[in-house]
Length: 296
Image (cartoon, rainbow, N blue to C red; front, side, top):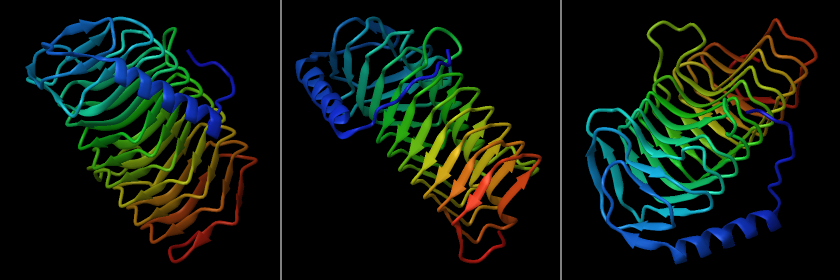
């Protein structure tokens, strides 16, 4: 459920989160699990899970840590959720690989952290669902989404952060926020999204912001995507700043029906169609962007 609020990313808050994560990982109990098993206490995985025909691991309690310890969860038929948060909050998931589920990592609770997890070959690599009671203030940190239909997707939530992520070669888009508010993607790479069969400015984008309010897109790299580097659509109050956006097959930054947004201090280079395209919007500030070649 989208709600307004302040998302603190200060040094003290991050240090506290890192300490809590370290303590949680240290206290996790080593366990051999089977596909579809539910955990209710902090757990350090001792084995790979292969050929799952439903969920991989289900979270069954708030405030626990799942340390994948370098192991891999693999679907046998591209169904189910690799890691299913089941609405729980304050959960930490770290250090492993999830491959080939319908949704590799599915987060529908609040205040969760997923870090150093690689999601690949899924319909959705990471899916943050804010359409119910949860989906707010979640963090993806140092994760990678590789070769999925859709890389990282946040829908309907507020104040979530994607930071230091790599989204590479996902087919429909690399990173997308939809119908939420005050979400952030920062210091991340959104590269090499596949080129759509028929370019209609909706497929193959690096970063997508759709029907969002007050998002921040800062210090990212969006290059080599099959459509736009960043695609903002029917959104307002978006800040896009200090990004490198280059060599995309359509526009660098593509704005349609965007209101009151700041597009500043971006390096925009060698995009095939246009550096910045702005249509059917109003009140946007486009300034101090550097175009090294293609038109602005």
